Image (cartoon, rainbow, N blue to C red):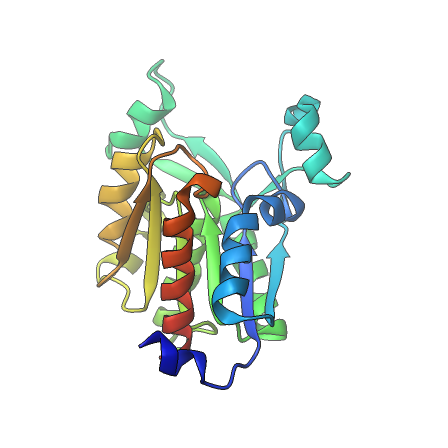
Length: 241
């Protein structure tokens, strides 16, 4: 039970965060404020977070949004790869994404994945790998590449927020066998990608632990206190298993 867990000697927990497309490490630090607070409550002090910046520069026009600009703290907006759709009809982006005959090309994705692998090699291992949206795609690719190489995963558990499957057909072979590793997936029921993500991403893993919150494409907020507490609980448990 939690009592015996609480008496276990605590080491420092190390967390690596991979942001979504069109933000940056500073913004993700703000986005994870509830998760960070609950992890600290659950584990006690000694949770060390590191947020990586995606190597690909994004369209900076979004910085005209004053709040976003403040959270970015003078840093440019970034992503992990660009998306090129091999189809030029006038359907919406989402409709094309759901049509698997339409091919998506992730531009510069190898650069993004190599950047994460390199960082892990130099600064790992970590306990928790957290991905949000585009960052979750990178977590899938990093895990699949390491499995293909027969290398150990330099983390214990993954937490994927508002994620979805890899959509670039060049990498689909890597996921024919579901990935076997502890993973927590969190979806917002008001997220436009909710149904697509829930169906497509859960199939990529052997036994994902799945949670939902009642908001959109975001981390669960202050009103989801119980959920944040449960997620933190499960993450810490998995780190010590």
